[in-house]
Image (cartoon, rainbow, N blue to C red):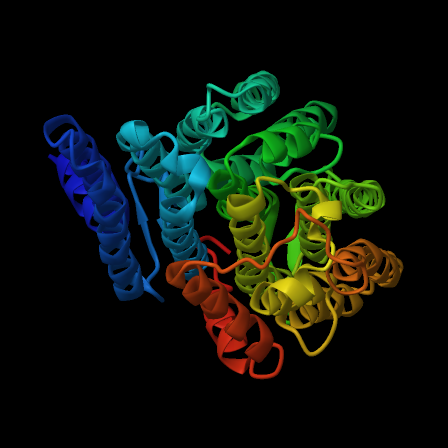
Length: 503
């Protein structure tokens, strides 16, 4: 009876996930019954996401644990806390924008007859990401990762009639399977040491029994392989440029934001709940001795920032360029985490809001141009700023923001990261991050040079974007600009969302 009441009580904290699951089923059934009304399916999906959004708003600020595996457990398999709710809101908003992108995408329009499968897979991916964001047990973490990954493998190669998507999907599956297997082996080592897969129980057992440092370090690195693959951290990033280039543009944008948000939630929760015993009066985490997570995280952050920015310098395909840019941004976020403090989480949350706006906006602009000229090559953007002023202006806003130039929102995001690093006395890492941010200005401004200083060619006609696309680009561009000045509201919401269950 206790187990039943525990289960029923836990259901109340996963209402948003239930809404997503119901939306998935509705999309699937509608596709099976109304075969001639495929164009309605994305609007059903948006309706389901809007309902989920309001359910998340209702949960904002709440803290609960659910799905306990034993009566005396401190934390169950699922945590509802402000941190997870904040990132779920980002995932839901990103999903709505990506569905609108899909409605306008010529790539997705070419497979309208399979739109039911497309949106069903997307909702499967959303469900996996939302559970991963709140998962506090390695069993639920692994199931969530697989649910998210299996859906994204198929979506990356959804345009199966073309060679490039099929190749990228195959690479994605291979890299994903290897990283998943390595992570599972690491989890098995941890389970062998402590007889539990619950993160809080692992930390408690480590405090009481002590760590077998060599085994725990190896296991932690193996688990990080699975995390690093999801967030495109170097050296687990090899899939990113090929998959981003080959996937349909809406899915590329989706992987660059939503999947990364879920991956960072996974990383933060594993470190915070599994390896921190609490926090001091200044908000710095007190880490369990033995596993030197800080040195490892700093090394990964430096590699990820540097490789992403350096390789982006000579990319001519904008999807590949933005893929390496995405890797570099993951490096900045990993660097913020290295501070191991509440300021780390604040910086990550603030950065993700602005990153969502500017990165989705950049990919949306590339999609609009591709719909018209069928190309993603930087040379085909010559004179675009003069032939299509609106596209040139909004793309410029997104690029300046990605580069972290004031007064755009991206500058505020990077500022909070550097503040967290300076507070933690990680001055050298802050300087390396600043140098990388400066380096990134070159390849973003290279695009601006092509748009405004090169003469238009026959591939860059005047592009009149549809009303829906114009509206969405403006909706993304305006806050990207305004939040660079009026950012206090976002920071306040992030400050309210720093708390994670268990710390």
